[in-house]
Length: 87
Image 1: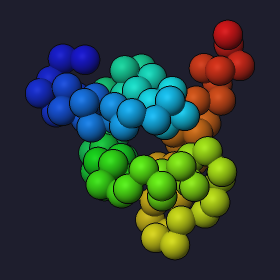
Image 2: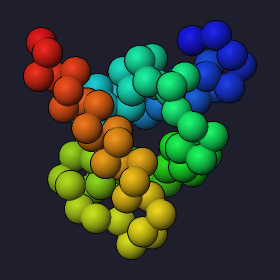
Image 3: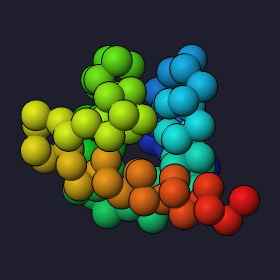
């Protein structure tokens, strides 16, 4: 992580819930710098939601009512699954 933005996003990903931290933090460390501007904006928007909502979407796989978030949620989950499968 090089930029101020990446450091800021990294700290915003530290939610204090192990389930979320294990998904969000590795995503930022390993993939945030590769994202397109639109995807970065979506990820930043995703982080504005409460932990309970993030848990529903990222852990329980409930589809968000805000359809614009589906793309970034799917990307985060795809990268998480890929990194988890490699372990």
